[in-house]
Image (cartoon, rainbow, N blue to C red; front, side):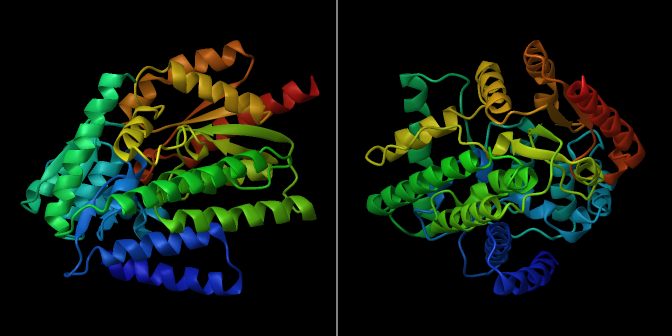
Length: 405
């Protein structure tokens, strides 16, 4: 089911790419093609969450990475707003609806025999605990090995050493399952590719400061999360090249959509189809930047790859105290000259929702209005079009009043 669904999307996207190369469409094609390869019997498949694991290490081996969260949420049922049809088997099997819809979706796919068997199941201690538990459930189902990549809440010499040590152990397991010794030259090249992509993402971030907004912040968010699978791969470099060309062309031609207001959106966007962005577009409100689209880590040291990747993981703003994240969001709001901030709040994301008050107080102290928009990533039963329309329209009225005042 999963490969055939993806193949249909790939065919459509490939046709669009032949008409005109676009960075986001190229991302979709490469991502779904990679997920299809994960089902091949002669492929070494490794589960990993790209947004929460240093993928540069994975790309140093001849394996196919598979992100169970991203993969399941790209199924057509979720995108069109009937994700619950895939979650219900998990609920019927005893899993509570209070569990994150992402994870009920994964378990539902597992129960229906939709997921590929892997040779290794990697997960991380961030962004949430649920992801790690679901990884264990999937690995146990396939009688595989689940490895937790643990990232502590502080940056120090000892924490870098601790995390780097884990990465070396994971590299040894990748050697075992792939039958391939780690080539340090190849790992350094993956690090180099990541650095080049990081540099072009910095350029993309700078270009996105232009007004009117020259690129869709929603697509930038999806690139930041789903596209994280390609850090360390030349594919990520090519995605950036195409998008930068698009942005420059739009700025030079003056074809960006008119805007009356600019907003920062965080932390992520819904997968299912909603009325959110249609309402914002109708009111000429641009999502100019999203938290997940920004560069938050320093350039990687190619001569010390394990320590460099450890530091990258530790610098993630969802690790440690909220201070660094708050400062980053304040900087984005200022640099992109936003009129307001929208926080997308999903019911079961307790880790994220608990930090909302800290972030909102800091932003409001700077006079920046903030909307807490409650809905669900992929469960349409936890999304009310009328409720979100009411909240968004009220927020737009607030922005208009501040501008006219």
